[in-house]
Image (cartoon, rainbow over all chains, first blue to last red):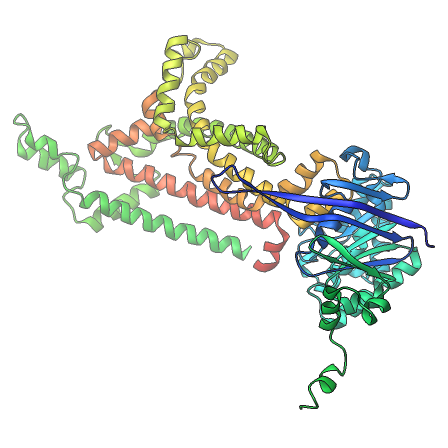
Length: 272
Length: 322
């Protein structure tokens, strides 16, 4: 179980911004030498504030973005140096659950077509088989077949997130990169989605790279936690180590920001 | 269905309003078709008065409007003073010529714009994209008139294309195939001017909508399953970019009669352009009103067409309208 499925070595990504009416350029480093490894069948949570490079890392690992330098090892294959044609066979194995379920789903398709689309693109099976597989996948994420003909905009936020999960899993990936899967959902729906993700991980022995800004939620799901700050991993440890003995001042701040039940009563000296 | 009915009714109201206002404006402007005759010493004032009475110009304005409406109901659209015949029989052949020219030109301009715009949007910042940007903005700042004159000069110098008119003198004697050939050769010059004039604007719209839609999360998601580049553009990015483009298509449908007016005058295409200019100068009011109404009707039809197309293509709009 401890063998790493994904290893990122010294990954950098810089964006260059052109100034208006000038030849000067501003170089913005989004990732500055990130190293991390995700164990097979486990969950690594990448925690950090907005703009710390979390999403950029997710997009580099799934190769929606070309990294500037560094290596991405998936099993025995180095992905960062592959071109788009060479990547095609590896795409299904690494899937990204894109942030924001509202815009991540095409409004032009029916629910089952959304889930079936990756199969069609990867030319897996006949049209009938693909539809069957899509409907089955929808069932697995808790979307009844009665919803299959609906359009995504008729769905609730939680249902849309379930649909996005079904779409990400329909190609049977080994690694699922979850980019802020709980953003914009009610607390109760967050819990439902979290439980669904845990159940699916158990069932399909999936490996998760979970990107989150909420340390509390992340530590309840993850086996390991990496804290990222301005493009560098500053600390990585198990959730309990992070919560109890944070080594970096930034991590301490993150831990302090976690809302613990009863914190108010004891901290504020019994007001209210 | 109710949505459609409401839009058609709305269009009808606009048409009536435009007919009344254009009628009023043209009749309230000083002078009429016979004003110049009064200046001529060879025509007796009585004759002019008799002519005006014959055409009903001495009646009250509402009565004149009523008379005109009656002639519309007969499909005549009023009477031309200059040509001494019903406006409709005068206009139809010219409407046909103008529609032919503009349809050909706009179809070509749209095909070019969609193809090049999508192609350039897929290569942001590359030299191909920059070249297209420079070319389209250059074309955008050159006035149509200058384009027409430049192409006219080219045609006259090289004799590659006939420099004016719509058909050769011996057109009626030609076989069916050479008729088409001859028409195409004559069509080339005016159509090229209109294409070059409208293409840059369309191109820019296509380029920006497609590049926006390429950044949409669900299009990105499709890249994540390993979609091929061409499929990504055709199946994902273009449909997602369609909404603003469909509205633009409706608008350009509305210009089918008017896009070529100036070009027709300069290049001698026997369409509505030269006739409209002449009629305005001569105050041949009923001809002007008929052309204005036709253009307005096309604009209304164009936007109706765009709405129906959007309604059909975008499920989100369908849900809201219900």
